Structure formats: structure tokens, C-alpha cells
Length: 391
Image (tube, rainbow, N blue to C red; front, side, top):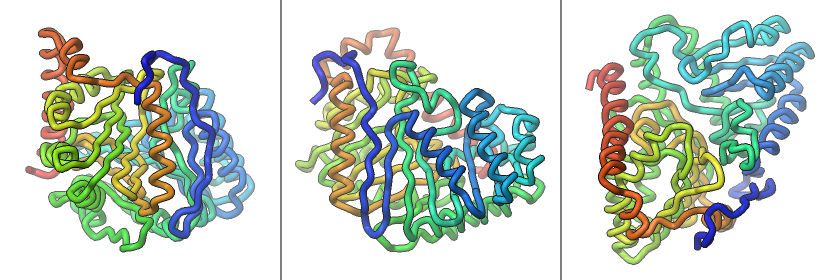
């Protein structure tokens, strides 16, 4: 249940470790813990570091991570850094120390063409082919700052186990694709269509610009179709209609569905787009919250005894267009632990009842929300998809 005082002081939970389905996971809900874990992981590398970030900012924390990568390259660790050309504004000269020490640096979608509108929104680091750090957090002070500093509330994890092999395979395919000149969208669609996450309890699911649903979209939709309980924490929430129907179905058939969305963001249009959907969810019996302490960037879904976490939001871009990755874990103990994290966040969130929703709505806000949904949920996705896929 949400706190009566949604502005009550919020503290990020401590890092926690849990074994699930033959894998060892360590989760980092706190920003400074995420930075420390990332630096320690880089410094521990003995043979290789393969790393992709949507956003790698030229600030103090970005320099610390860059310098750690350059130092790793200097001690003969193979360092391969890729960043998204849209998300990362830092110039090539910022990454020069990595190259100067023998590492490699490249940009996804470096040239201005229709491919530029396809964003690789993934964030992951592979060390020695044995350990992966991934999640929603980028490399920037904003993602490592505390709630008191209005940093992003996010979640990263480090995992060891068989799923690491899937990360290694994906990075290899992505790296080869990035070296080819031209847009080559057919090639990336083919990679995504052929991606096999396996059938085990821990899977790496990919999303991207495909004409048919990606593994990420197919699996989460299948799980929602039979769900009895849903707990979702999502920074950006404006999913396709079919997903909205599946969520609304859960309480209508006697189950429970609870959603935590952003009360603060760097993009007000995403909040407005989410609020456009509240009324129908409330009428269906879905429990809604808006997280108040700071900006929300977390992407986590708990469906019955299945947990999803990674880079994908629950919006049109993340479900059908951007390159995304989500780890899917079937494990009851992990699901219970993550629901504890959700409860911790609910205690500092504002419960959105129908009364609260109507109070917030107002004529002017209603217009703003409709325009936000049109921009975020329809126009951005539709234009990018038609330019890139011809649909």
C-alpha cells in the first residue's frame, strides 16, 4: 500500500544476491552501488571486455568508466566498446584514450540515414566471457546519483551462468553487423528473427525492428495471457492496445495487477502518455501508482513466478522498434524477492485512484495528455517504423 505521504524520504534498497535456476544474480537498486560494481567488474577483467551502452556521457562518472576501460586495454585486456549513435552525444575524442591503449570504439548507426531512427537501447557489459552486467542504467552521473540528487531510480544486475553465453553470442553478431557500411536493416531484422533464446528457465530475449513480434514481445505477451498476478515497474508506459487488453484482463478474471509508473521524468510527454491510459485500467480494477521520490528509469515485470528485467520499457518503441534486451527468469523465490522491491517502491508512491485521476485530469491536462500520447505512442513510432520497415 502506498504511503499516506508520498514525499516521505526514500532510500534505495541495498544490493542483494540470489541464486535462481542455476545462475547467480546480484541486483543493484542504488546508483552508487551500480557505479562501484561496474568499475570493479572492469578492473577485474583478465582477457576481454565487450561493452555496449545506449548513452555514455562525457561527465565525471563517464570519465571514470572510460579511464577504467582505457586502463584495462593498457594491461592487454581486449576492450571493445560500442555506443548508440543517437543516445551518446560524447564526441569520438572523448573515447580516444581507449583506442590509444589498444582498445576499439564504434558507434551503432553512426551515419545519418533512415537507420539513424532505429535506436539500440541496450546496456550490457561482458567480462572474460564469464560475467555480465546489464539492466536499465546508462553511463552518466544521472544514473549513479542518489534520490536526494534526483538521480534515476533504476536497476542493474550482474549474472553468472549459462545465459552469459547468449550475451557473448549477441555481442559478436552486433559487432559484425556494425562494421558493414549502409543501413543493412534487413540484416539486423534477420538476426533478430533467427535469435534463439532457448527453452531454459533463464533466457536472453531480444527486441527490435522486425515485421513479426520479437522474442521479447512474444514471450511477455504469452505470459500475460495466462497471468494471475502482475507487478510492473516501468519508466515509460504506453504499450500497444493488445498488451493493454491483456493487463486489464487479469483483475477482470479474478487476478491482481499492480503498475508503478513515473511521477517524475526528464520527458514530461512520457508521463502524459501514460496518464491517458489510466481511466480504462482503473475501471478494469488495475492498481496504479506514480513513483514520487525521483525520476524513474526502472524496467521490471513480475508475472506470476516469472521475472523480466533489462533495457526495455513498456511502450511502442521498446516493444516493436528499438533494439532491446530483457532477461526472463522462471523462479518463484526471485519473483517473491522482486515483489518485495516493488512493495518498497509503492510505499513512496502516490496511489492513483479514480478520484485522484479525475482531480489531476482537468480540461487542460486532458489535452496535454492526448497530445503526449499522440506524439509518444503513435507519431514517433509510426514515422520511424514506416521509414525503416516500409510499413
